[in-house]
Length: 102
Image 1: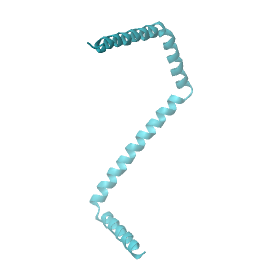
Image 2: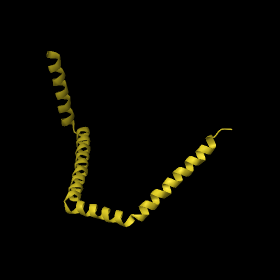
Image 3: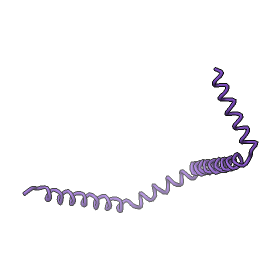
Image 4: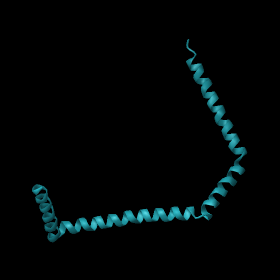
């Protein structure tokens, strides 16, 4: 008979024991951990970091929204405008002719 199942049980007990030790240690230091977290949050808020991150996120989202709006407007405009279609076709034709001349 193999010791494999017995080793698995022992490993499970060891892991469970370690988990309980970690949980008890965290509970014992919960007040201290809470104070450290609050101090770090306070530091981030008062030194302008949080404000900077909020502005950065807003700018990124606005940039995406504006780009999408322009892309959608241009897409529908180019589909519906014969003048734009002709200008694009002329530009592509000119570019192809320039390439062939070289």
